[in-house]
Amino acid sequence: MKDQSNSSNKYRDNDKEEAMSNKQAILAGIRYVITKQFPWKLHECLEAVEKEKKDWIISWLPGGDAFKVHDADAFVEQVMRNHFQQTKYKSFQRQLNLWGFERNTKENAERGSYRHPLFIRGRKELCQEMGRQKVKPDMAALREAAASVARKNGSFLHLSSDSQVPSMVTLSSGSTSPMSSENGDAFQS
Image (cartoon, rainbow, N blue to C red):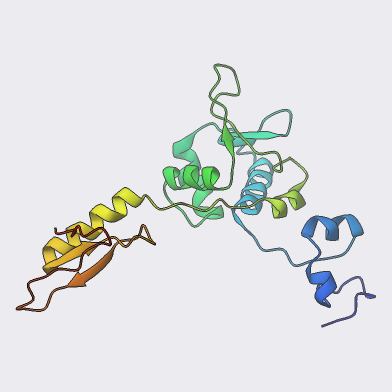
């Protein structure tokens, strides 16, 4: 990789620097590669909408620590299609939730606004420190889906003791004893 002496180089030139966080790189004045994740795109969207004088659709709140979508239909038609790869407002809201934005539900002028401690007007670089939350699978729904497939395919559902993820086993014709769990119970569907 390249030497760090030239300020136009990326900050990753050896193992020691690869461990450096984006925040440390910002504070050290070192350039780094920016990937445009959802919060970064949202920040750019808010900047663009303000320049285009469409802040009646979506805008920063006066404090600069929250934003609000004022007209969801206009947002979908005029803004989302240009800034996000989404066409449904519910998908946009889901992204906000996955990225840790909190919705204001209090009865005040800011009701319906969203905020995140690292999403600040004029501080787009802080978006790089935001993390997307992992979605945990709904195990009950997973088991029910597996059982449904098992019924359709002539298989049965087996839940091993070391895992909560069901496994599917198809019985060969003529087989009379299904696989059972360690306690002797079969999970026949």
